[in-house]
Image (cartoon, rainbow, N blue to C red; front, side):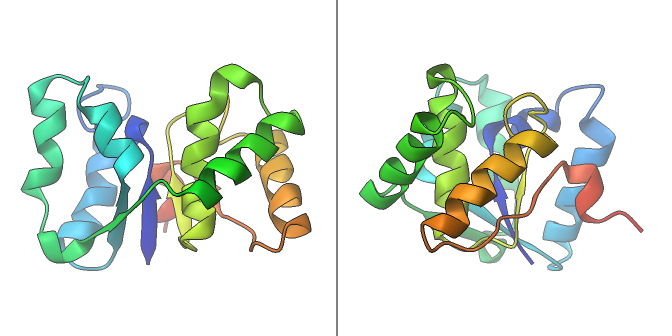
Length: 149
């Protein structure tokens, strides 16, 4: 399984309310049952995070990390999400994460952002646009949902 991460998931490792469920997801990565997709956008956002948050990705097996770029195609798709009012302009970075995950055909996007990303109405909006523009549906879930028994 290829899991695209938004920045909230890295922070979730260190947030009391999300830590246990986030670490469970990363245990699947460590045990080679999943690959995480890390974008240049996530890496740029982590530059503003505390050092222990920035360094977390370095604790994971490199063989389980796939790196992807924020491309012009992803920027254009993100702009369409905004133009079609799935979310407002202030959520552009969230849209860019979703566009990258869509274009690289991630199996799922993991996020703890329930307002702009892991939200049924928003997911329907993103996927409606994806289908109309020739992209596949994107599964969007919180880390707790991805490996639920």
